[in-house]
Amino acid sequence: MQSLFWPTSSRTANLVLLILVCIKECISMPDPHQRDLMLKQELAQQVGGSVELTQAEEHLDSLLHQLKIKEMAISPFPPAKHFFKVRHLIQKSPVFKLLQKMPKGKNRFVVKCFLYFILQNYSVLPGAALHIHSSALVSANWLVLNATYRPYCYICFTWEGSVWFQFSAHTPLPRLGCSLWSRLDTLRARLSDVTAFDKSLMQNLTLFTDDPETAYPTQDAVWERFEKIFVALSGLVTYAPVFKDYIYQGLKELYEDNIMYLELRVGQSRAYELDGTTHDKAWSLEVYRNLTEQFRAAHPDFIGSRIIYSIHRSLSVSKVKQAVQEAIKMQRQYPDVLAGFDLVGREDTGRSIWYFREALSLPSELKKDLPFYFHAGETDLDGTEVDRNIIDALLFNTSRIGHGFALVHHPVAKKLSRNRGVAVELCPISNQVLNLVSDLRNHPAGVLMSDGHPVVVSSDDPTLFGTTGLSYDFYEVFVGIGGLSANLGTLKELAINSIRYSSLLPQLKDKAMKVWQEKWDKFISDNSKL
Ligand SMILES: *[C@@H]1O[C@H](CO)[C@@H](O)[C@H](O)[C@H]1NC(C)=O
Ligand SMILES: *[C@@H]1O[C@H](CO)[C@@H](O)[C@H](O)[C@H]1NC(C)=O
Ligand SMILES: *[C@@H]1O[C@H](CO)[C@@H](O)[C@H](O)[C@H]1NC(C)=O
Ligand SMILES: *[C@@H]1O[C@H](CO)[C@@H](O)[C@H](O)[C@H]1NC(C)=O
Ligand SMILES: [Zn+2]
Image 1 (cartoon, rainbow, N blue to C red):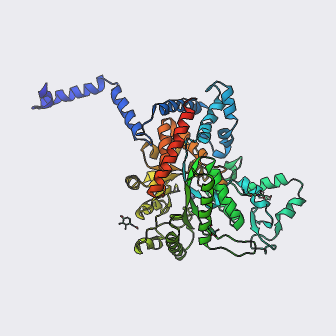
Image 2 (spheres, helix red, strand yellow):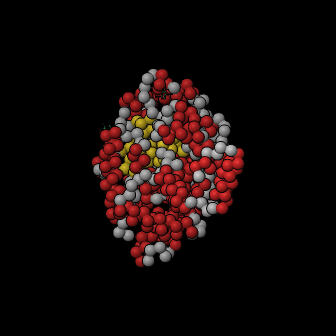
């Protein structure tokens, strides 16, 4: 037989060929062991694939698996639809009552909501939120019902059908785009239906609508509204007294969703007082620090919050340079508060990282350590200058990649980000609402997840997307993007990642991990009895 494999003549060579062909053709069924092996290898490679589960965790995992199978069979499958159209399906909260009354798993509606219920109510995901913008942190509800009800709040209806706000001791002067300012309390006193009016104000502060496809048919259309909302928000949230309560409220909304730690992108706007005077940025950082302390005193298991100093990418090189210098200075002054630097705003129409290379090289020239947390690859313009932000973010040693929607198109960058442990900040609802992807099962992060790429989940702009906390985004990642293969190990690793890839210093990171582990264990023991 040996000679068959070591042919000495062409005749035996032909024989070998014949046998090989026969093996291939005659035994057409693939080897089932090989199949098992391949499946196991793939599962082991995905996010959470190497997480070892305890017996209790395995029990809960199989329960989750069953629920997911049922959930995938129902129509509409929420992750396949625009979030605005299915939020009510995901969110029905009387679920638990129904669940207790009904045999589990029989009622589709219950099953659908049950997954969300687990994610939201049972601290599956105590963890950290690493990608949220400070002016879109709190629900539009709170902004209208609390902030706009304060005295001296003026409103102006803009020529373009939006609103601006300003707190002022005197009636503000007319501005280009908006001619008449009215005091909200006197205006409300004249209205017959204040509730409807307040609802319309909320509509001005969020993208949330019942018919998003008609309201925002293109990326341009949705981004135009998006930017307008930020203008509307800014007059409200930068009023110093509102600002303080607003940040505290933001921490509260996250904490109620089991978030223990926050990294907040903070822009350039300054807080102002009733008489029009403004505070410098150091004031804002101090307020952040003070409020975080205050919040921690009231909630001892809260770890804290840090700031990523951000500037809009539509600005000039010299402005960005100035901001980088400022960030370096503030980091020296408030090292516990300031985590790093970022460029924000729409990538497709804004300037690229490469355009700002001179400004962004300053820290390394000055031998200062200013970590970058760049938004990069929040685009579907493959191969363009915009798309190269992914490469340039990594060349500038970014600590994480905001969105990284385009990363899977760049194998070299992908490998580099993986090897360096540069996590992708995945914000699925944001990507869907801003029209990068419609059915979330097609989100490119599915590739990253099955490949065990470092990923963290965040919510980007909760005010605008009608979410609070991270549970909605976790739902979309776990049920939609991750598909049936995402399991309890995936959830566990995603939660751990949010601490692992945070900017927390080692000592605080350890503390955060300990607090998280306790919460996780409690979640497992609470739920494995289900
Ligand atoms: C707004 O919220 C703050 C802090 O939670 C509270 O003290 C204040 O009374 C509220 N104001 C209004 C008008 O609801
Ligand atoms: C904003 O509020 C005004 C005033 O109530 C309303 O007329 C307008 O339709 C609202 N705009 C949006 C986009 O909801
Ligand atoms: C922050 O707290 C410190 C200590 O309580 C206080 O002195 C300081 O004025 C506060 N800063 C701001 C901006 O409120
Ligand atoms: C990035 O890190 C490498 C390795 O530490 C260093 O050589 C390089 O100068 C850094 N680049 C920038 C732009 O900071
Ligand atoms: Zn963002």
